[in-house]
View 1 (tube, rainbow, N blue to C red):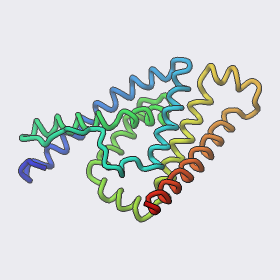
View 2: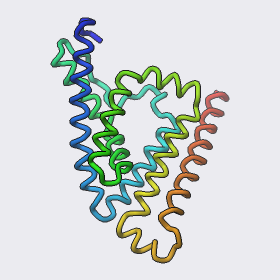
View 3: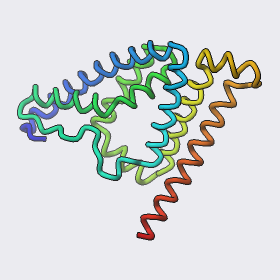
Length: 199
């Protein structure tokens, strides 16, 4: 914001490219880690929490995981800040992408190449869209919940121990996770709204 207008676009482009590179690298590491037994299960549980955070809309309380980051004085400063802010705010996103990619680094790169520029240039539009059509948030939360359920069910140890006894285990777990996350997320959000109205 503190850059001259003619330099802002350059900073955004290079900052976004740097952010994509960092995300691809981190997600590639996450893909490798998720291949280790039980880490996929833990990743799935973390993804459930991320879905809850999305539904409860924690960002409305004014907190910022990248708090303390200041404006850049030149293009190089701005690019560094964009990459650092994206890194600090994107750890949970890396886990979500790794889960959704299901082991494919190509899908990681393709998804990030599309999503990060959309967020950088279209964030205001997306926020307005979510305000006008709140179901979009639940749609996103549902996708994350389903992915989390798949990660939990497909962990080699969990699948071996529980999948043997429970028919259609790999479908039942994502369905239950989806229902629990959406219903509990909706209930808690409504409860919070009622409390705010009472105050």
